[in-house]
Image (cartoon, rainbow, N blue to C red):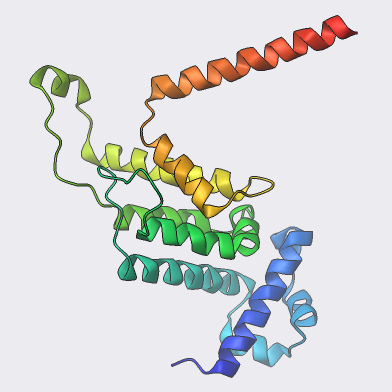
Length: 215
């Protein structure tokens, strides 16, 4: 079991790294920078980490471990039977966790050297629940032929894309609102999305024309 002192020290070191990469690129951050920011000795740093890359990797793994624990405690969402409201399933609770740690997670997912988003993608893929097969008429089944692995990858990518978009919204909406958007997105086909995009483009073009006339 990790002692409270060790946990507090590691959190302080991680917080120092996050603060530094909010202000400059990770590749320019040095261990000396982290030592100054965290107010620790070089020996303390190397007691826990091999280098700054190991620190980054361990902090990402800590976040993923906490997200994994959520999926072990709460019901896993069945993507074929999602509720129409924000029931307390593991995905909703994970969004609450992400919101609570939004500054840290946003900093990491926007850092080119981190692998947090890839680790989240792997976690979601592992914990994804697909319900019993739907009854599809034979004439439609022919047109729906797709390798299961590709179908799963597309679903996971959809979830990760929504999470990434939500994280980078300014201001970031509440987990309840983001989860409602996620539920709604599950009902939309590519044609629906194209229609929304086309409508948005037309509205933007209309505004631009009005601005020209006003000039």
